[in-house]
Image (cartoon, rainbow, N blue to C red; front, side, top):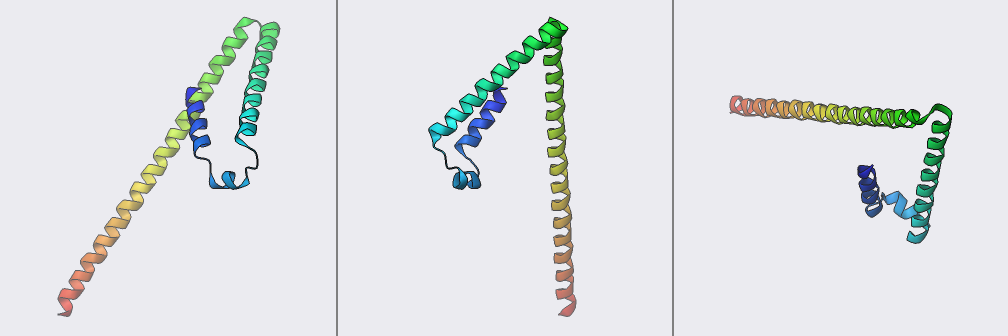
Length: 116
């Protein structure tokens, strides 16, 4: 949860260029909307908690929290795996490019030596 807040703060400090150009609202308006959305989410969560407690008992809320944690962990692992895959692909591209350039340079040197 704290990392979500940190990420939101970073994005707010450095918004994308299209958001800078298209955002017509003031800072106060944006803050008010963010605050209202946060309070609405808190109210919905409390309503969900009350519903689960009354319908399925107090353990239902704990089960939901556990499930959320598991899903969050799975998403983080998926993101990590995707980043690792991208890093590996980049490494392969760099190695292939460097090898190709090295071979081309070697062939050029051989060509120069044979030509003279």
